[in-house]
Amino acid sequence: MPGAKADRVSRQMLFDARIFLSEKLIELSGVELAPDDLSPADAKREIARRRLRGYSLESSIVTLKPRGNGVRAEVSVIVLTYPGRDMRAMLRGAATASGRYSAGTAEQAVQGAFIGALRRLPQVLAAADAKGSL
Image 1 (tube, rainbow, N blue to C red):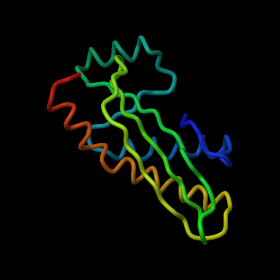
Image 2: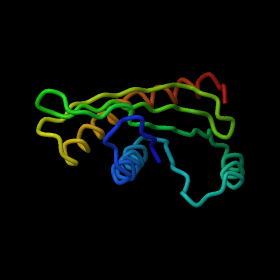
Image 3: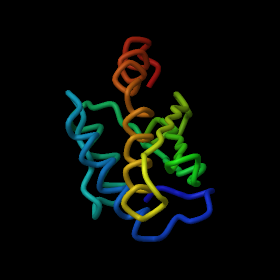
Image 4: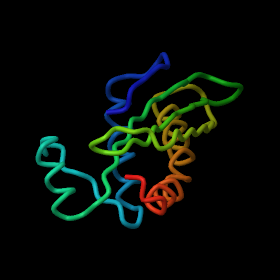
């Protein structure tokens, strides 16, 4: 579940952001998401058994506020190794959705910001894999 440092972020918005992030991540080539009910011990075993590289993402809605004739969102995504939890990258994204502040325009801004943050994720993962540092 994403975190929130910003005001005006509801639980529902965080839940929706989590679903959105999951959908965007599974669209990336070579990315698989662990099931929610997979225990850490089972995840470690599955990673080792299948000889995968494991990563964990921590995301946060940093700011969410009206700006001019729109809503501005800024997010961060931290890429960590899994199970080691060594930080590999911090990705940031920002977007503005046009219109008066509402749940809909706020959600559009947050989604746009996450799309911006995830834009570099394939390169980050490829660079980490190329170094063999995991």
